[in-house]
Length: 262
Ligand SMILES: O=C(O)CCC(=O)C(=O)O
Ligand SMILES: [Fe+2]
Image (cartoon, protein in one colour):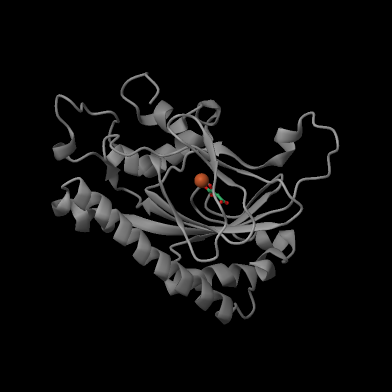
């Protein structure tokens, strides 16, 4: 991670993707590199080739690929368990095959010194409050904490850093697929101390063209359909619009069939 982020900004900016928000991102304390289809070695090689055009970087490619493959296994295991717990066995294969994987490597620098307390919160945001838009996210924060998750009763929980544990987070698209049986939690990153923070996230993302729709087993009189069927890329497009960016819950603004916030 250190080696990647030490590269000059012009180099990191060569990490581009055809999908919005899938390449290099940089704002305030946050920087992030994105690797589309990180479970496919050739695609990881394309990424390292973007950064090191002459000879690529075999060691980095292999490390990223091995890491992604193991997280991919975990992602599939968790999704399988979730589907089984809702009696959706017959959809498991189709569901597991309906996603690609985006790996994000993230670096957060420590906030500037600020002795007076005014406006302090603002400067400490590593990542603003959001829900993930995809299916499932497998997060890892290595040594420095910062990730906070909001509970249903509106309390912020700090996630303790751990070298050997991962956090599994439900995304909007899994919530929609399950007709609201699980919901995507709001979360954010707050940078408090003086240390640089590194984290990683593997996102399972609906493939282009796949319609995210709830199985009929999850829809009945007691559980009416909450979201319209949609294509993930259309949601990303919406998120790029003014209305999408301004909405408190962009996903709700895009796909909810009723106006009552969840
Ligand atoms: O860095 C983290 O721990 C969280 C990252 C995150 O929430 C995201 O990339 O969606
Ligand atoms: Fe997130």
